[in-house]
Amino acid sequence: MSGYVISLAILNLIFLVFYFLILKYKAKCKINLVFILCIFTIYCATLLIQLLTQGSNSKAFIDTLPTSNISPFVFSTLPLCLLNKKLQNLIFPLAVFLSVGMLCSVEISHYRFIHDKLSYNFALSLDGLNHILYVIFGIYLITTNQVKLNLKTFLSVCGTILSVVGLMIVLNIVFQTSFFGLNFYGKHQIYNIVVCSSGIMSAVIYVTGLLLFLILGYLFQLLNLTLNKKFNSKFV
Image (tube, rainbow, N blue to C red; front, top):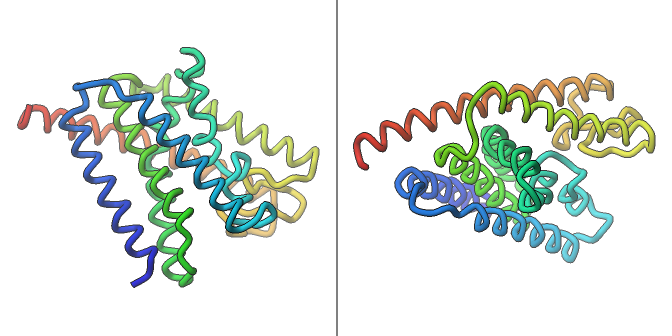
C-alpha cells in the first residue's frame, strides 16, 4: 500500500477527531498559542527536512518557501498575530475563510501523489498535517467567537489575500521572479500545473479560484456554526 494512502487516511482521521473535540470542548480553554506554535513549528520542520533531503535548489524545497504559495505564506506569518491586536485581526480570519481551500489542497495533492506513484516523502505528510491543523484552528476560532462570520470580515480577508497576491505579481513583473507561480515571462503555473499558455490569464484564473475558495470557506463556516448549535442542543 502506498505511503500516501496511509498518510491521507491518517490526516482525514485527525481532522474528524479534532473536529469532534472542538465541538465538544471548545469553551474549556483558549488554546490559540498552542495552535500557532504547532503550525509554525511543523512548517519550519517541513522546510528543514526538504532542505536537508532535497537540497536548496530543489523544487521540493522552493515549493515550501513562504513566497511559493498561499499555504506556506500563512503558515510562516501566523506568529505575527502575537505581536499586536491589529495583526491578529488580519491573520485570524484567514484561517477561517481559507478552510475549504486547505482541505482541498490536502485531498487533491495526496490523490496526485498516489496517482503518479511518487516515492513517499515524510515532509509532504507533515505539510498535509499542517493544512489540517490550520483548518481546525479556523474552525476553533469561529466556534469560540474569536472571529465574526459576517460580510465585513469576509471583505477584509479578500482585501488581505488580494493585496498579498498583488504584491507577488508586482515583484514578478519587476524582477522576473515566479512567486506564487504567477509569472508573466513563461514560468507561470497554478499548483505546479500550467493551465493555459498566457501568464496574464493564469493570474486571472488563480485570483478567481482563490476568491471562489474564500466564498466556499464562508459557506463551510456557516455550516460549522449550524452543526455547532445542533451539537450543543443535544449533548451540552
